Image (cartoon, rainbow, N blue to C red; front, side, top):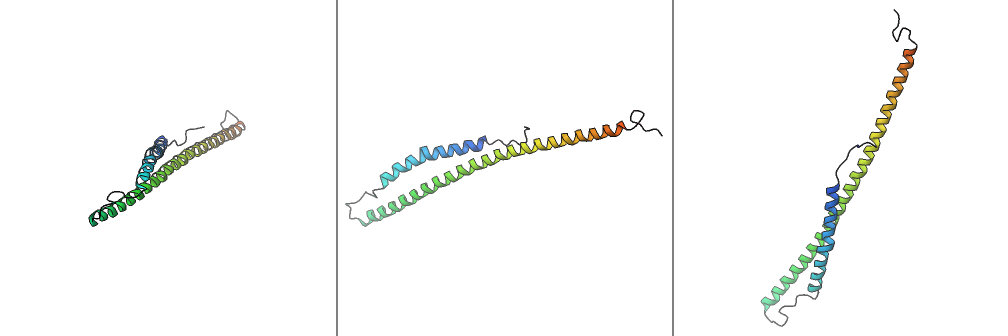
Length: 136
């Protein structure tokens, strides 16, 4: 098989693997731990009658909700990006194989055509007397 086109996809595969690994081994466990910690709600100031403390608790709860949503969206986007990189690498690898196969086919067709043309020329020249030159 000829070389055809050879796109280096190692970087895409490495990127995809690293993002998947970082997401599953770092982000998800940390997120799970934080979710357990914050799952019980905002606990500070429960016995404080101050309106300011209750307003701070409400703002803090909204911040935790927003942060949680951001982390979830970040992990989802990371997975989508990693999957896309892996799919692009696989498609490029498949294209390389198809290009190499097609290049082989073209080279074979050209070689067959050259062989056929040489055979036809040899046959035509064999009918000409005087070593391939016609007498005038």
